[in-house]
Length: 102
Image (cartoon, rainbow, N blue to C red; front, side, top):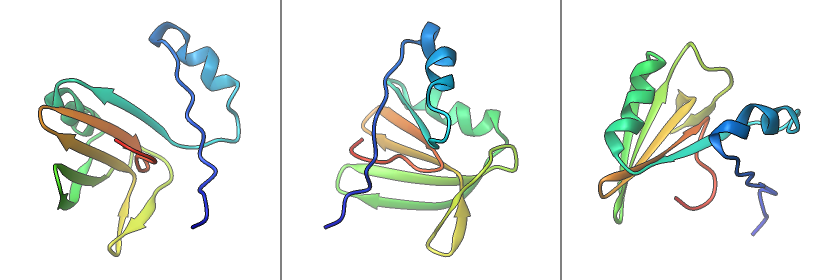
């Protein structure tokens, strides 16, 4: 199949702002949390409304929409701009979606 041509850039928290400036023109961000509750706190922080939940294998995907976040995609007919994927007690958060493995 076709590749999304996605590229992952990692940065230490203290370097994140500087690295972000070098990525002008790219969109999407994601973060990993060892405690899923910390991931859900991000949805709360942005006043995001839960619009869809999907389960597959050992991952539960939570899709949200927040007026405070830009951009978005349509998933199952609903607008989404915040994605939380929970596996066990850990989670990844992405905007608008988490791309690649998580």
